[in-house]
Length: 521
Image (cartoon, rainbow, N blue to C red; front, side, top):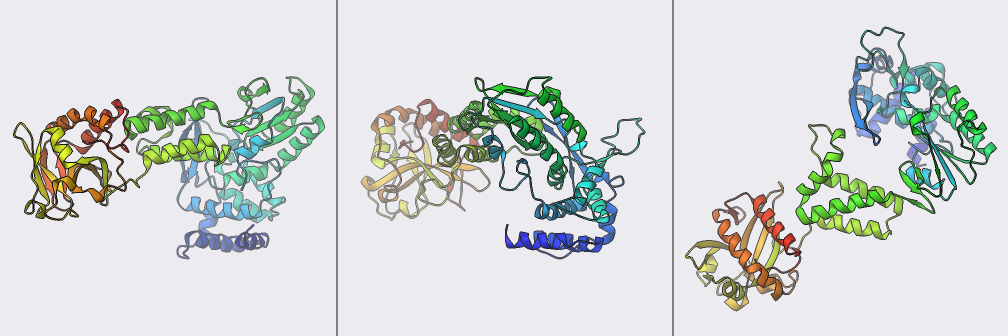
């Protein structure tokens, strides 16, 4: 625990009045936002501590479930959200998690939860139905009055009111229903995770006692409860199952009958989405999906990779939200790293592939210019049957010309680093692609001296050259020059840059050629 956490913890235990609570919440807000303007007022805090009045301060979000359907999540917003964020910081400083709670706890994760059940003959999983909605205002208030918090009733009521929602919210109350209001913990509020763990302290203690009596290992990750052992006591109707169901019912929860799972060692054993055998691991399909997306990305581009991946998860994405494949893949790689470790060969290989398809630090001669392939000027002229004008007067300009056999004249960019009177046997031609900050790019030819590319362009491969020569001519003819941007000296093709890039990438893919190879087109 850091010095700041210790200081906050000491102040939290000194709270006696609502003025003390307000003062500490404002201190937390100032620390989080690095400003003291717009503090919470007593009127604001007390107003939002009435969940039955300000339940409209929640947005309903649908999050897809792995098993199908969607979970309703109620996310607070505005002033209420900031109050809950500050309350969460306050409670986190005071909360001492049990040894069995693995979810929503600092320095604990799904990996720690799964590790507890490695190499067991039997793994038994149950899920608590409607976990957050089952936690009532009264349970929250009572838990705040007990250890580790120990707030008086006034403070407990205020915090419980700030962090619960009423079921008479228009989105929650069925039409025509008129019953007594019920206040419960909303899934999606910043303060709900720590409060759910606080309410479950008694549940954890009783289930841990049950596990000890039957010689079992027990952990809880939010609403996911797992037992494991070398022997089987999990049959339906057994003494263990009967006592387990009684404990959960008396604590105000219900077991989701559709999510009761018992797995023997002879079959795949899964704990909170991870495989537990001799060690913790992700499912094989997880790695297969990652590998497939990265392969498509490398071979056909980001657009094709996103198109192959997006449909499986479109239900959980808002229509107005732009799908970010890079962020999704990075998150999945970080998860793989957390499970298998940063030294794992599979993770390293996939991470390198991700860096390859997303890297912006490509080999360049000038800022923003990528060299797709290069060859000598004389080779370029001979193999393509073209003539490029070069001389002292020509080299003073930005551009010279390519004269094709059919008489077509096309401009070619001259590097500003190439001096006048350059000899043809010391000049090279490169096909370049310049990427802009906006994400667009241009494709163009450039003349430059040999020393400019020695350090980053591989030696010419003659076998590849013969295969690509005809395609070079096709590209030049198919995409004539429209105009020149004086600002950056880039020749802009007639067709959209994306189309040219697609043609190039498709051709390279067909020939199984990497951009890193030296291709004279």
